[in-house]
Image 1 (tube, protein in one colour):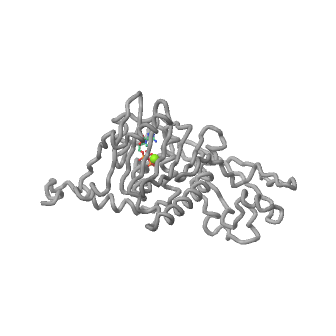
Image 2: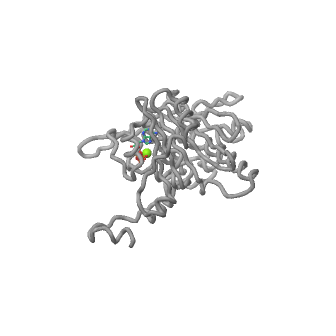
Length: 320
Ligand SMILES: Nc1ncnc2c1ncn2[C@@H]1O[C@H](COP(=O)(O)OP(=O)(O)OP(=O)(O)O)[C@@H](O)[C@H]1O
Ligand SMILES: [Mg+2]
């Protein structure tokens, strides 16, 4: 007998197996998925976040560890629920109660979350294959022995509090191949993620309040430096700077209250005023011109010019 037919006739509960598999395809880009996990860490007041792309015993694994508030066991269970409780702070980066799960399972088939708060460690896991085979939302409690090293790493990383998100059975970040090919892919992902996340979290990184590190395979850990699309601090070897346009704050009437946003721009030096290194620093490319939109300090949009406003062409290519 199928599980659905056991339910009362008016209880059209979604099929866990079908839903969890289709939620993998909601269109997460790689950097958006990592950024969602990092948003959660920042919302939990983390000041240090360590991303590790590991390749151990032929298994590719991702861990993202933070020294934020951590969670009690009850809070962890709520965190793992698809549709977690609404966050109390409306300014929080998280809105839907889904990101931790959907961002992770867009790329992996097993999500493990370890956390600690007030000296108590807890862990829970979603395993897609288990959800599919049972067609039930059966949240696993992994035995602490299975994740002993990770628990140790978490408590070394953060004295009190802290959370470690682990992606296992990753089937979508890399393609199958020889060990050498897999290591190469992991290295490339590390490089691309560093570039992308240094732009997404630029405002946090330059504030000095949040440190993000990246460790790829056996290479040493690297600290991400924020990347400013306006290149505010750029001074070329010839002493040329970006031309900063005046910042403007624009109020928006929302009926019962007003909000505001501010806008600023810059014209970066032209290509022939920059040497090779400076061009790299500026990320000189037609694709990088246009608008960058931040919400609560986090880059949320960077796809050039709003539709129909401008075309990416050489006469506007220096304007950011
Ligand atoms: N690193 C973390 N540290 C502490 N709590 C966390 C962490 N990650 C997630 N949580 C908790 O889990 C809950 C669910 O996170 P999730 O990302 O799924 O949803 P959200 O952030 O509320 O909304 P969104 O879907 O927009 O990301 C959060 O509201 C938070 O309470
Ligand atoms: Mg979130």
